[in-house]
Length: 449
Image 1 (tube, rainbow, N blue to C red):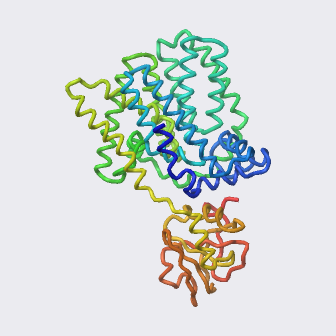
Image 2: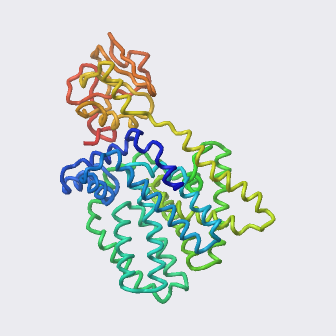
Image 3: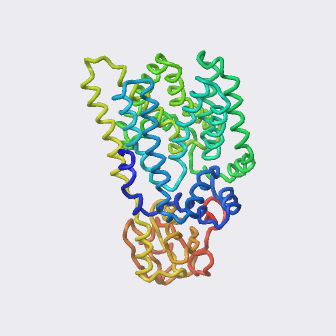
């Protein structure tokens, strides 16, 4: 109930964001082949989540309500985390792991989003459960279940492969898995083969350079992941770095405690840090694919590691640990209340009310990617808005968006000569022959169609 309650605010009312608009366009495709083609053309993820949402959409569910798929995944995830944690720590500490999962800022924000990330986190936990079940009592049914989960994970997000690689390390190194490792490895391989037909599209998606915005390797970004999955409070400050390192120490201590408890404890520890290490090594190797949201698959296991660390402390410091745990649960709420997401639907209505037509350019400040796709979605007839370069001609009317305000400017000079538009990005419909701008239709700034 806590997980559902944390994800419901804004789920039905908050405007679709940039990435969600990309999902909505895919889900709106009339046929399944066109859906697959659209995913291949514009996305950097596999098609399973879009397929599930497309099927539900064709049952008559409104687009905005499809966010309930992520909310439901988040609710099930929190329950499964409590169940898994209860097998390695006492129930009160398992409840702490569940609360961290229910309230973690990345998990909450993606748990009310029209994207695949919450499903990725859920499938990571389901995979761990299926793996342990297949190792503890091998049977063809359990192995087929494991193969199905591997296939589903691989067709949901490419970073699921890092979880599988970490689990294979546990499978082949942990003595408790010795008797079943060959059969279980074969089941995992079967699941990988089932997802393999999408591999050629994977390579094509990678070469589309959708990750161009990710910079070169930064150790600080990697070390901050365990904390930043649960809160972005103080993210870019020296205090935030100290918090990140402290969180890393707590997670490491919890993993050491789990490693001493049981084979399941060791698996949880491996899944808390293994995918992060593998993704960091890939980043060092050159591919710029590392992003915080892609690491959401380790969040459930990090939460259990934190609970295990708290469970391992001496009883005499329990009051202090309880205070720290309460602070850990409050920090995600600080992150969530500080996030400002524009009401793109209202901005579109205000543009129209101010007299906007597709022949008028729109100026936005800041990251124009945050505005372009949502405005395309909510404006009448869903026009294409391309980032555009000013030229010497004059557009008599320009509409300016500054956060939640819309202004109508009347100009008698080129756009780049007007001080009010200094630092703005101009968005314009490339289908219109405008005298003041030239749309950018190639490279990374080109619109996704």
